[in-house]
Amino acid sequence: MPGFFETETEIEPAGDGRWTAQISSAWNINDNANGGYLLTPALRAIQELTGHPDPLTVTTHFFRPGRGDQSAEISAEILKSGRTLSTASATLSQQGKPRIHVIAGFGDVDATTQHNAAWSIEMPDMPPPDECIDRSKIGQGITVALNGRNEIRVDPACFEADDNSSPTEMRGWARFRDGSEPSAMALPFFADSFPPTVFSRLGPIGWVPTLELTVHVRRRPAAGWLACQVWTDDLHNGKLIESCRIWDSTGALVAQGRQLGLLI
Image 1 (cartoon, helix red, strand yellow):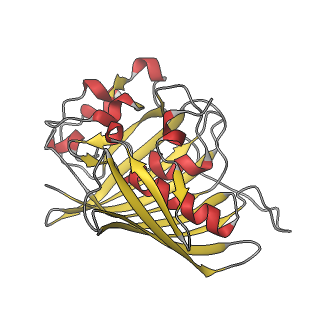
Image 2 (cartoon, one colour):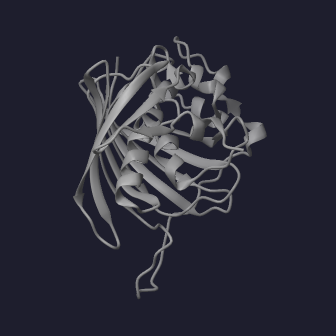
């Protein structure tokens, strides 16, 4: 049976490179849709357009917040078709106003070339999920409906730093609360799902909206918890660079991401 993430990011064809979607408020942070959730219907349109199964590279620019419990219109077009990678762009609009613009390259994450050289990044040491703090118990000063759909467990050590050393970091675990398993299509969402890392240094200051997010999907995730490491090493004039790495339950690195955020 499909989980909430799949059913609440469904799209319907509207003809001539256009689709519609119903954006749910269950993924909101305060009054605004979580960015990783909002970009997923646009990704589904690009997936249909390219005919490839997996997002390999996704870059999203956020023009204005998306609204839950409202319909959305998506327009998409192919920029370049290829056997290994096809690139397309999509714009998701609500009430006649563009909310996000996505450029994504789709292919098959399991496809290989003739080269067999390989190396990767090991998962950091951290406590198991049942020894970490549920995000729903971390005060943020705003309503986070997202916690009802997405379960985040944060390593308690992330809140124990007592100096101003850089970078500031969050580590922990993520999964869907309804028990549905992660997928390659869900990894861009998970890359934008953790509490802002500046909370561990500055406290629960409110909302840190994303201006731009880029995610690279590296492997198809195995079933189970995802381990996440998120850090900020550059904060200036209220704008920050936040990076993330995600590993699956086997310890394989499945995605990396980087975003420009705004401190409000």
